[in-house]
Length: 285
Image (cartoon, rainbow, N blue to C red):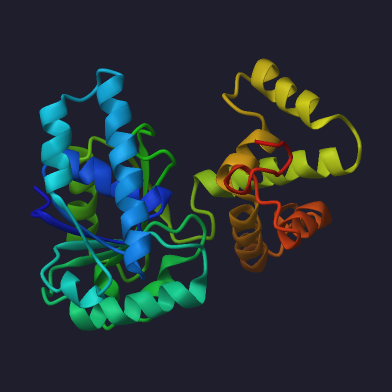
């Protein structure tokens, strides 16, 4: 048993709202922190849309949707996480911002048994744990988008992680949230992104070099490798700014050219062409 009944989620974007949704549907008391009231309202709208889609598809009863919503609260003050058993940080891939969050959480979360976790897709957990006085209680809990649909969670442990903390985090993910958990040591990119990011960057380099059109590259991987999306479609879905941030972290970690952001990706991010969320990336939306 995990002993986790109260969850705090820092950041109510696509990932944070998704984590909150699966937790609330599982019976957990959830609090989402956003920096501004209007961002909190957008997060609530995102959560409602996702739950409504589940009802429309017959995967959730209307009464269960309403109950899940009642379990989710919103705040703009991290101090309200004082009573949380687990806090998952799910903000943008900015190490300095994350360090500030963990330093504050260390000060406000009261229980010595509470777990502080990050949903980061690439930043080493040891660096984030070092911002706290409780590094043994800091782990990575990396979910995948969209969280209500994707079955996997990567549990990232450090040389300082306490085994009981690791076991409780895994138990919560498997027993409460119904996720399949794989364990990864604390290396940039963990398991999935260490393999996935070079592939995605390779697709961008192929397009940049004029080897094939974006459509043909993606069709080739969908039909030739049975991938649900090609590399350029998936990059647009992830967000090209996020892609570049992750690539930069991995290149800093490994100094391998295959992790370096291609010039085209860098220019597109500088131009504000970030993929689906801005309406244009490698495709128009």
